[in-house]
Amino acid sequence: MKELKGICVALCTPFTQDGEKVDETALRDHIDSMLEAGIHIILVCGGTGEFAYLRPEERKKITEIASKHIDGRAGFMVQTSAINTADAIEYARHAEGEGADCLLILPPYFEGPDNEGVYYHYEKISEAINIPIMVYNIPVHSGIDITPSFFKRLMEIDNVKYIKDSTGDIIRIQELLAIGARVFNGGDPIAFFSLLAGCPGCVWGAPNAMPREAVDLYNYVTSGKLEKARELWKRMFPANLFFWTHVYNASVKAATNLSGRKVGPCRKPVLPLTEKEMIDLKKALQPLGI
Image (tube, rainbow, N blue to C red):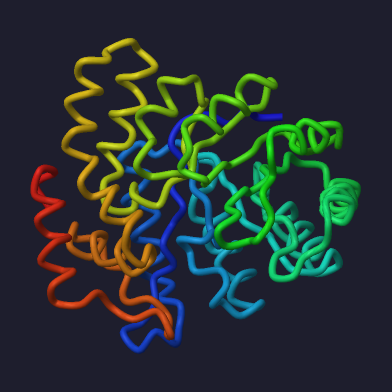
């Protein structure tokens, strides 16, 4: 089993200008941009990939294109969540068949089950596949909080090897690390501090627009060049805070397009940023030269 570490970009899904079709050429180009910047892991069909707005056949097609195009040049992760266990198993098996190194999986969301049902969900998916699972904790959207005590229990399941925590709470990150969890931070404004705390990496939407900076931040922290890391983070923080405090996917896609990486609009009903928001975003990106 390949041990995952480093910067994982939660890849934007490029759409055509009407938002109705996946732009497959732009998808390959965007993957190339991430690889050229040294991104360690590429995640497709994640939250930043707008999986909730993708049709089932699109999710599978994106997985297939990405797998073939990455071709082992970076770690490859697929988000394979579904509300019901049977669909989640279907997505998981497909991703495994396409060569995924790991699956990112939410607990069943929207009026989901209690913890016993959540445990059952992960257990049955684990029994159906032979690759690692990264549990995805984002309670603001899923409605279920994977607490450290509950994740300690989930770690008993064979293939549950990682957790992505997107609470944006550095205390929670440290609590998870203290129980021996391999924690990937998903909270943009605390990326630097989570790496300092000992996270092996981040699963992050911001690297779509700033991949080199994200990789440099990781390299500086892991090599002990903390002053350089601190100075870089000062330049990265304004944009990361903007993403966290505005409509996330619209903000990340706007920044990514501004960086010269064309990923198109979000799929409706997610609307573009307003003129005022675009002015504020450009100001937040200025320290990065974007």
